[in-house]
Length: 331
Image (tube, rainbow, N blue to C red):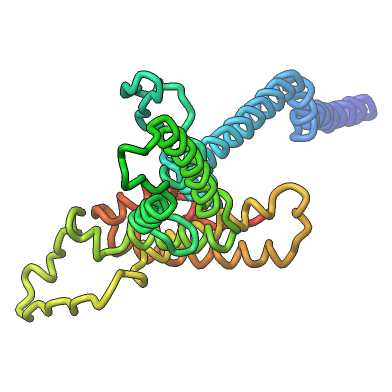
């Protein structure tokens, strides 16, 4: 009996020792099934489709943003304009041959009536110096007209003193021939002194003189609105000094120098295009002139922005923000 009781006590103690181990094993298996590795693998498998959708959606958003950035860049570049040429204006077009930007009324030789030009009619031919404002060889229109009138008076046929023996038919024929010859001579002289047939150097000289007459402060101060005075000058106790009177035409102001540089830039830009793209010297000279004009424009933008001088210069020369803002590169 003693052995039987001892055996029962042993079995009871074994059972008590085994049960916790079984429960501990089950608890360990439960803990292992809920581990972070298992959860990550399950979440990865479950969110595979969600992640692929989010990835595709992000790629679409990026592509849309890149496209929009390209469109905005093109719009900004179009708004800034060309840093070399700017915008073409009638004044810029007239620098090529100094012809009027619009056709003028003409007189019909048959009916002697004034004929107005049609809206779509081209401007007059550049070969006629009578339609131009500036001429070649440092001539002016009054000087040319005076010389033509004097030559006509010298070449007129003589009138017979004895009018009784004079032949009216012969005199009329001689006068007709003289008028025809004078017309041909006038046409020839007009072609010779026209800037359309002048060299590039003579045309540049005439354009520089035009720019001085157009933008020089000796002429613009009489009709352009000056810049508004600043607060410092309004409340300053220092007496304002009177400007020194000019000794001649204004050739050194910023707007005149900008206009002269613009005329030279257009000439170099025309030469640089086409077959002369490999001309390194011309490219360097063009870049120097562009940067020099940019510096003057920045200076004048800070000093004369909003004034009549600035507005008149920008509108006539067709200058845009790209000519003084940002970096200018000649490609």
